[in-house]
Length: 252
Image 1 (spheres, helix red, strand yellow):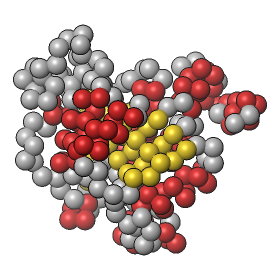
Image 2 (cartoon, helix red, strand yellow):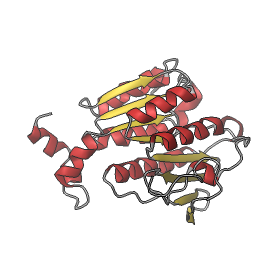
Image 3 (spheres, one colour):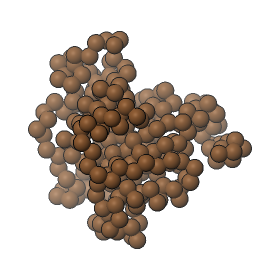
Image 4 (cartoon, helix red, strand yellow):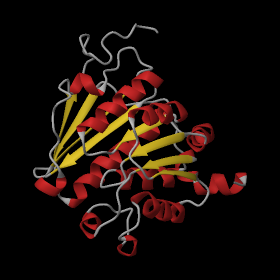
């Protein structure tokens, strides 16, 4: 992109003291993998594309159906029946034609997640099931890549970040130590539409913060009660007995 066009497009971010031209170029040079292109992946991908993340990987094996449209805003009415990655890529290119988008429209096995974690600078977990969340945690721990996690159902949402590069950072398994736990689904329990936008936008914002070297949610979790419009911050320390990260060597 021509430098003048680059500066004009991202001028409102470049003006910020914590961004500047160098920060915007760091965003442009970043590679971010978003796993799950549903209610959370929609705002994450759209805001990261708009913010100028230069390379977005988007992963989802599902197809768009009518019930998705209530909250999955990256998809459109005329996208029903398309793969979610195809649908999302179309919308994201309309938002920012200058970014590169890599699609993964199949179920990612643990080995593939591990390989992708090594290729990307940051992974954003927008999935809705615990097995994949634990696999993403394992992959990012092994690759020493930051992970931004979000979840939303009914009227409740949560967002947190984990960074294995920081010896004091907890991991996802410090939060949920029982790998046999089962996640409730939006299909079964329902979800209020704007909630996923709130949580997904927080994930996108923390992703930008991490790319700028100023993570804010590592070691903490924000819980949101949409019914009463209340935020609560929970400190999340590293668990020294965590089976995933508890044996990490400080300063490794």
